[in-house]
Length: 490
Image 1 (cartoon, rainbow, N blue to C red):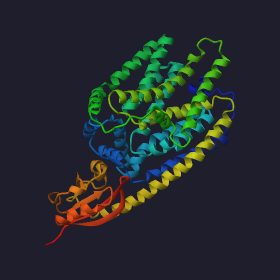
Image 2: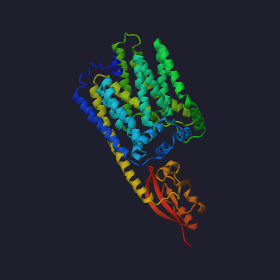
Image 3: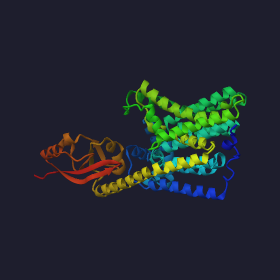
Image 4: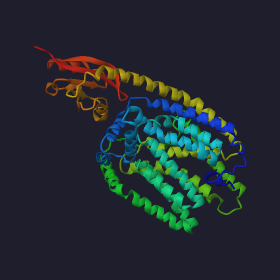
């Protein structure tokens, strides 16, 4: 049978004899640095969209204010606390906000080059480190100032600890699993859903193995309930509030969920390779030791099933809740559990005969399809940041704390204005219906499109001139047309 030692204990590959060869390690190290560099150079960007600006506003509050604010939001607090701690050390600066999201990717990269390389082999490691570095979803969330990279990190560690529990049943692995699974649950509510399926697998394993598993699994589940209890009432309140009123208005299809796992030009092909390679691993185990009872319920097989169980279970749970209650699920919530699927792709391919050919083919496909997308993303972000800097250069010194910003962009009014023009009052308005009573000294218009002739005429009739300060600018990835309003002198 396929041995589990290569996943959870000492390396025991008969087929990977040169894994520790200096040349391979040198190549992997250089390759990892290249991948890291491609992500690292993108943290020097000051252009934040609405949710990112919300994160930045939150982490600059004191801890009690942060907890109260996130309790009124739709996400648990751990991510915000982590970002606050990181910024407290390195400073509340634009690149530090991005670095806080890059950090879990960096740790995963190190784990891949060490633990996973040693226990799962070089083919699995090379594939996994490539997937977490250049897939479009990874490129986005590795630096986005949101909780998805941390959710993926904690969920992936939960998956690894689950595998060790199934194989070794050691107390230290239960402790590790409890800690990182709770961290995942405190990072994102759909990470809570994903990790819940790991607990169901543990309960199933306890029922078929019994013995000392019973006490340890029940204890772990009890610890999880106690550990999440402080936030449970907030979760129930959040669910009640969002079920009555929430911004989402659509429900993703199962096909869209499948496509989100390997987002990109070769998403369907990669998903098919994942499923076929997993089936091949199961078939190989059965054919080699088919006479052995329960071969498909071995620790390794159950561990593989658990990854798919969590992936598909999270999809179905999100869609079902959205259909029964109201839309509460979007495909980006699948990103954390998608990282588990990426690992499974590398792991399953590394267990097949001809793995070197398969791995080389998938790596070549990834580079041919993802690098052009990466280049487009990088250049687009660079252009947007240059336009942003020009926008700020034209307005930062002119907009004073005593001024007022009127905007028709809900995102600018919600968080973006607070980030780029801190301390300046702002209101959401309809530019076609601005009343002269709303306009005082030092009033600015920030619109998502050029002011219309009718809106300009309306202002003119009320005695206000409209000076164009920025045309076709950017604020927080949003188009920005900025005007200074001045009263005509009689």
